[in-house]
Image (cartoon, rainbow over the protein chains, first blue to last red):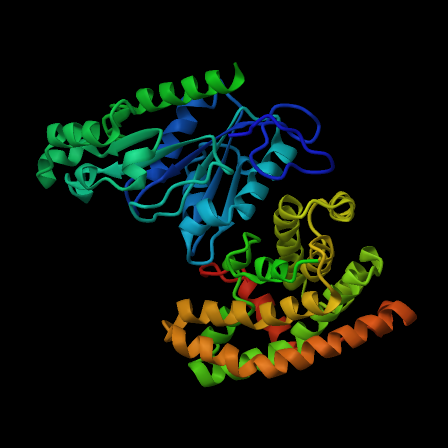
Length: 225
Length: 224
């Protein structure tokens, strides 16, 4: 990725590491995954874990409402000016992969209006197992699945499960109730992802939340190094 | 010039944000004005000869070197609905990003500097075509076709309309797209002589009114 080439003229074009004024832009982390797997709740948990140590903002990609943005506002995880919603025209994967311009504008506007920022979380609208973020939009991506969606999802693989920089298996507290075998999910994920990390998370019990936050801190340390 | 650059610019996959907009189709579907292929065709015909003609004339004028600031003000004056002005500038900003990355140009840079939140989309389209080495008629075709193709593909999603029927609508409108592109180029030549007041000001009041209503919906698939 050519993150360090510079542009003449106004406004960065895409993934440039620097803003037009020459300062280094915020790290951008994408969160994708199927509908209902807990992307928004994971974003909220990350905000609570990191907001006292980092300057944060969030972009949501709601499919046909502003529910995700409104959930984050209601939960008051960040001040409202740090949360922006992008409309995706019935195609959430298009807005994070094929035509990223609206999301790029949202992240750039957040940096202009509430910056300087250390980290921007870009949450995809709920989609399917093939949805991944463009490298022109984010620097790293988290794919969130849950145990209730079927414990065969890691085995099925697909671009999200296989290539995301971090795989989060959410709602582990539900595993006994839905008959999901966490050991099998871990083994299948390992087979699909080799050395790429996996976190098992339960937002109810709090398990794994600090691991996800720790992974984000490590990404940020690498970005600012 | 490469005429094939027009295919790049006019491709529905050109990453300039159009996929999130319905060209008024979502509001028209909800209001019962588009219910199938026949009413989609009527809707598109209306759009083509009003908003489409104005957009094509603006784009062709920009290719001919008319001052983009004056064209942008003329676009504002021809867009009564504030919601449509916002949508037009958003799309202009998104097209600007894609165009500058695709056909780097000092003129595009200058316009981006002048309008950091976006100039009207047809003006940016014209300058993008100019940067790509295309002619006024090419930009006029692109704007005229976009004025109907976006609404057609949105209707496929909104009504689960048969995609072959929607494509048939576009094919049947093709001769009219030809005429609108010709008229737009003629208007643009007039603008070179007489200034932006020579631009057509065809308007579709229902598009404007429906856009205002649509912008207030709490639940919608498309941004406009």
